[in-house]
Amino acid sequence: MLFHSLPDRAPPTSDIIGRSKYRSILASLSELCVQQSLFETLVIRINNKLEHLSSTPVTSSDEETYDEARECTIAYAYDLINTLSTVIESKLKAKHVDVVKYFDQIVPRLYGLAIAAAAPRVGDVIPVFRDRRLLNVIARVSETLTWELNAE
Image (cartoon, rainbow, N blue to C red; front, top):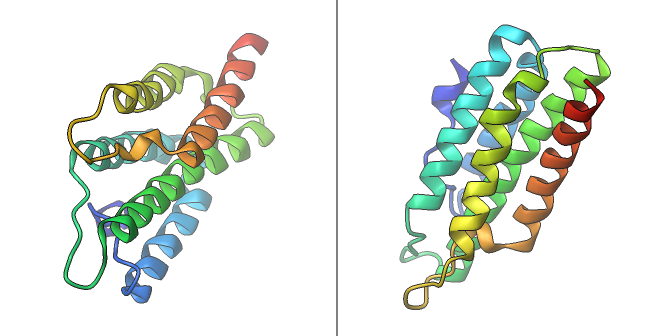
């Protein structure tokens, strides 16, 4: 399935095809996973990818610097969370009632990534989930689900 085609690491800036491919996959998933049976899989897979990105140190290659590799990782994490957000909003617009039951699988895990990133850092490594852009998209998902939880 499409989930298996998503990379574990963010493609480097030089890999335009790889970056385009994962964005295309995420766009397809954002349309397909509005279905209840696929939404649960999307939540699990995106959570796993995000956990992997947070626990794997960003490393540079011969072709890119540490800052470039970190930016690619941040962009990939942002795209993953944004896909989740897009599907949630689509499901809410379609009046799907199953969204709220995933609150406990989504919000605490996203907050956990942000909280872990706020811990004192070791050396020069800056945790990926300390980035303001990721915190903003996490907040958007959290706010959407919290409002929906309160409406129920």
